[in-house]
Image (cartoon, rainbow, N blue to C red; front, side, top):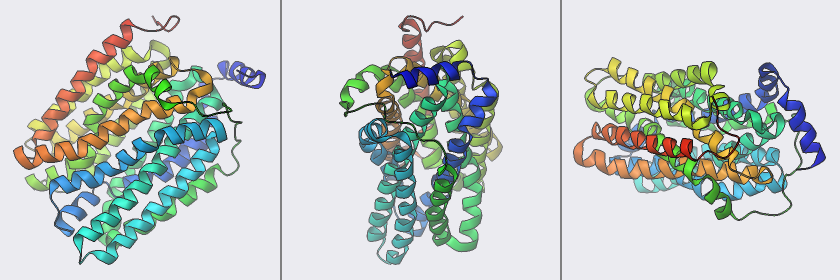
Length: 406
């Protein structure tokens, strides 16, 4: 570590929580605005593909999952770019790609008379959005940890996560409203404009120098964080089945507005981060994840067995609350196991497990929904989330020296 990095770490070690928040505020706000590009279409895109273009639930899963597959394939590039060219540059490039996805969505509407072609153009937009999301998240996490120090890594993940999932919570009902007024074309235009606003928010924020002089083989860092990554992958299935299938579940039961399920998920997620986001740094990530995945699994079971919209909303809220701290819980364990000079690649490798999870969840559980009904995906979700409990136990037992908490 350079003298400058040591000085930064020493300064941030003594920084109060308020200063951490103020330092991270521009990044948090930019991520929130930019991620509305993802949140706005959440309740609209599945219905646009299924009802508007007449495609199957399997195709819906593929369209939703393509974003996460693209993000996965670009994580190594995003992480190395953040380390070797600077985290701010990665974030800027990410927002530009996210903006271009909205343009692709708009272009897809020119081919609605040929649904297959329209879907292909939508898939291009999802690929662009996935690459943009990869750069934004990887860069924002690396940038944030660089600004406030690795001892505040849990807080960085908490605040960046609040921005991400807050955008889902706000974006879903706003997306429905825009769709009602201007259709999918309105969604597309707004999705193209919002990331440009994010660029203005971070324009004057101090960039950090690169932390590495050369690219680090992705597989080397992947081997360090794979345990925490598996916990993230399994716990992310609960999030994946809500993003991909909750709108179809509400339509199948004639429960009305599914956007409130996204809002319930997002508000519970944010509340957990605000009131308990400090716990992974304080108590240890594995211990916090251990409890939270049980709460998330209970939420999935409630959605599976729901016979009213209210119960489904409550299940979505519990899913959001549990998943909220599972992400930084497993993430703190990943940061503690990674070399400081490769933090960007480590963050990319860790979040890649989220991409793997969501990329598989969409098409695989789309097939489950087509065979056993859309309700069944939430039983599968509960089983997958509960399995991450075993990962948390293993991480707790094998914690590196100096990371045990009392």
